[in-house]
Length: 225
Image (cartoon, rainbow, N blue to C red; front, side, top):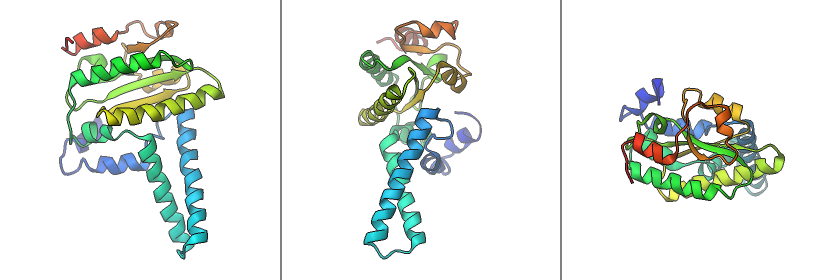
C-alpha cells in the first residue's frame, strides 16, 4: 500500500475511513471486465428487487425506497463478494496474520485450483514477491481465466466461494479474476517475479523472465516450513 491510502491506514484515528471506501467502491474501479460486469449487475438486480418489495409492501416515499434499496443491495454485494480480513488485517490493522498461515493457505489454493479447467494460470503478486511479508500483509492473487462465457461464470463462482473460504480461515485474500494475461500484467506492472501457484502450460514464461515457486517464496520471506 502506497501514497495517501498508506498515510490514512497508518493513522489509528483515520484508518476506519478505508472501510467506508471499501464499501463504496468494492474494487469495481480496478476490476477486470468480467468481474466488473458481475458486481454491477449484482447490485442492480437486488436494487431493483428490493425496490419492488418496498414499493408494493411499504408506505415509504419513492426517494426513501430508492435510497434504502440501493443501500441494502450494495451492502449485500459487499458481504457476498468481499473479503473482510482484507479490512481487518491490511486496512485498519485490527488483526494480524502470520507468514506461516499465509503460506499454508497458498498451498491449499494450489491443490484446489488444479481441478479448475477454466484457469489459464494463477499467480501471487505484491509483497510476497519482494520478500516483504509481515503480519499486516494480504495475499494478492491473480487468476487468469480462459476465454468464453462459461469460463467467465465459473471464474466468478470460484472467486466468490474462495473469498468466503478465506474469511472463514482468517486469510486476507485480494483475489482478482483477469480476463487475459495482458490485463493481469497491467494490474501488477510493478512486479517482475510472480509466485506461480498454477501454470500447467508454462504460460507465465511468455510474460516474465523471472518467477518463484511457493517454496522459493517461503525462503525469500525468511520462512522455512
